Image 1 (cartoon, one colour):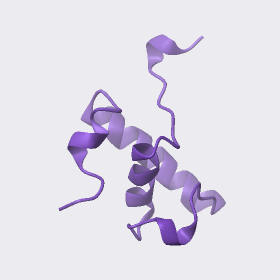
Image 2 (cartoon, rainbow, N blue to C red; image 1 turned 90 degrees about the horizontal axis):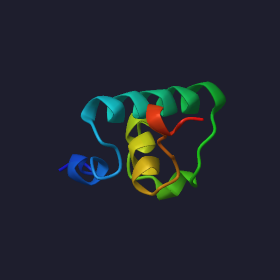
Image 3 (cartoon, helix red, strand yellow; image 1 turned 120 degrees about the horizontal axis):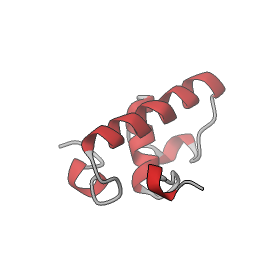
Image 4 (cartoon, rainbow, N blue to C red; image 1 turned 180 degrees about the vertical axis):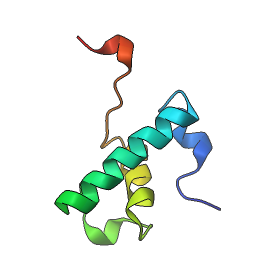
Length: 70
């Protein structure tokens, strides 16, 4: 089973497409800047894409929809 589950993540993000987009952007940021929001030992995933999903699940990433921008 994948952790975090897609069912949990879809309660935070309203579509699978947006979920993929947000996770890929955050994953690229991790690779480019080597900046993580949690301690290395707190992550259960080894890859940055999984770590990005974990950060999203824990509320460390805020997703703003197009309608909410000002």
